[in-house]
Length: 425
Image (cartoon, rainbow, N blue to C red; front, side):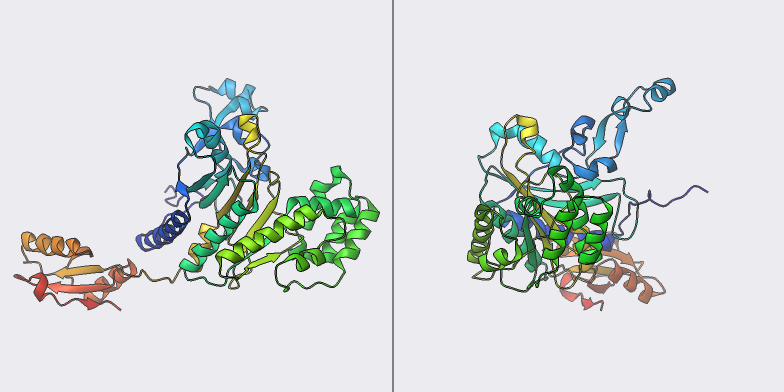
């Protein structure tokens, strides 16, 4: 028999799971809209050349391509070594590349500073494993047209607000700047050609520690003096719990990082503090890298003390839109890790959802049943009709697993006023 499972790395969702996902999405949408962002929608496919223009980093290697129509077997064999000749479209692997194209297309109809929401599925040819799927939902907010720290602060404030609204208070944002990273590598003496590979290794610092990073860099055969300088810097005393601010940032960076970058980060913290009543839930991390090559400035990741992985992240990508327009436009974005959030909120209740099962006897006329249901629905309830079975307990357990919170038994002649609605729990 053929498999009836979904494709590897993709999932079906039962009604209760789907309902929970929609509740989380509703909170995200509502909080983002409250902060002045407007939702857009883009196609699930983009042109192959655009998806492989060198702006998507390693994700380009994970793109699902769409075979050109009308190719016969001979044409496929002839083009086997040329992917662009086989495919002209591809499924989007993130929402940032489509947004850049969207802005370039519709710029004349958008405000000078455009705040967008995109919430939609994306596809990557990942190796399926726990927490990694080939189809998953991204929840992005972006600000295009504002080069100041205010734009970055708005994204952080809105994303922290989402966590608070979902009951995950205590979130923080790890912050760095790609320009600071580049300045650090320059101070240490790494050649420009070495830096992309060096950053890949530094990005493993949390996993392999300073010793592992230094050992891997020596294996890479990069400048030994530069590695020695980095090793000495990594070995210095650190105070990762210091309050975010100029003093903490300057201590965390080597001498020689431009004051302009430090000032930008300090201004970012001041803006977030003003919105959060003086609280600055930011943590400066001089070795936060983030893998996307299109980042040009501030980068950040959303953290929560209940888990040891990030719940989202983003950064400034001022050069991407210029690929489509021929002129640079400042842009910065933040993506909430929706799938991880949903996993954290598996036991979340559905507040305020009046979901009632009406368990009726066989002889109750249909007209009476639909009249009762209509009256409850008009009063704001969600109602399911179920005919009584011999095993009432199993019926009610199934209703509870589907998200229903209450039930009532219905006999002939019942009215809304005479229904005794009881909790399922």
